[in-house]
Image (cartoon, rainbow, N blue to C red; front, side, top):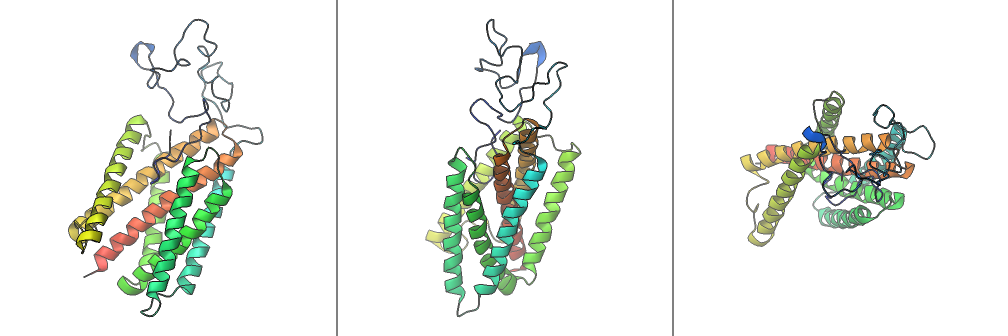
Length: 302
């Protein structure tokens, strides 16, 4: 499974024939979902993988005597939940610190707002480039991920300061609380089994996210060349509706990220892959925070 982040091309935990996310599920007649064209999934004579569906996965545990799924690895060098929590805490901590520094050091009063905006936009663009580079790399690069978090923090710090000081006082804290609430709600729903992450869910979320991003891009183009708010997707009742859709998509991204982390641990992904989990979770939380900030801006603007 690939991740569900706003950077749609970000790879998952797979390594060649290794863990790739959603498992094939048996159907009537013994067929399995996602096995078409997969020589390892078909019981063929002379196929060494036919009797062991996990044999092609170098991370999987070989505990298949009773058909049991692979368990979390106990050997060193494999990713654990503690690794994911630590790396995610590191990236989010760096993002928060740089956001606070940008808020304090880049004022948004009339005399300095142009300079602050310029620095913030530059940081955001560079951060986007770093995120894209990491998305296409085969291995996690902690330096790229940490740099992305730092630059994204500068961007968020200035944008949050503008909204908080010029549009809605307390908006930044409200957006933080909203983001944390969504994170907690999705985590509880996922652990309770209320959200079933499967291929259908993944396909629906990715299609919806692609359509959402394309609409926002078209709206931006109309705003740039036509002036005003473009097609009106970011103001009024329509803007509120799209803001809510953006938050819901972010919640779906979180569910997919939780699934990716859970499966990566179960299949014994390398320890360094925890940086990819942190990268994905950070991007998703930034997405949700920005959608909340836009919603608050619309609700408080004349």
